Image (cartoon, rainbow, N blue to C red; front, side, top):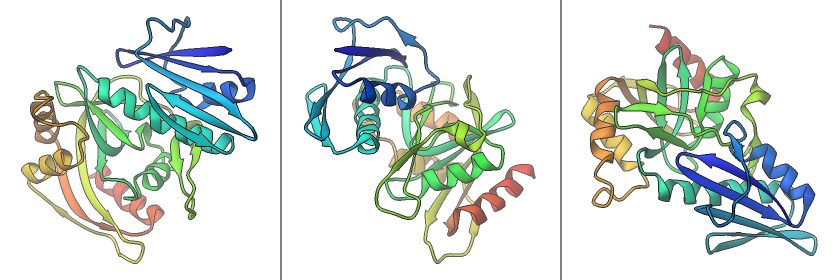
Length: 257
């Protein structure tokens, strides 16, 4: 059985498979900008096994298991399982469900839950020249700076199934250093809505970040001061948006002010 090992945010991830095609696909898509390491099952905090199962695959990650019928579903399932395992083990970073990109020397955060349209909007911003941080998790350090969580974008493209896309497909670079947060936009997605945005207090932006963190605050007290510092240095807004390309145009004008 072959394997790949990834070093990510203080965790060692080992992916093993009896299928070379599956392993090649996962090596391309699983946190591809992060360093690979020598395989060491005993020293790995996260272990993902991928087994051939008839015409499909079976994924097993630290006790969680799910099937995948093809390589697309395999990639999406593996990304999701690795996401959950990493976030549960973060020791010096705080995660927020948010799209995140970089303009200049500042990060822009788009907090929101599942089906909030984060990935589609991030993809449009990358097409417009933004640097990629994440389409799912903004990682905030204790100084309130955002760090890249460089998983592939998972785009629905108008359908129900997610498709993995790499930032390079949008001619975008991946951020390689923490940056201060410059803007927080809490946008509600409504396909029929026109663009509407209003400035809000930093306290409202902080609440938006807290509502979208997967951490239990009582168990991870570092989260509150980290997110407070992130919002304290930011221009904060809330509103609605419809089409992602239209929203990206408005955002570009906003960050240029």
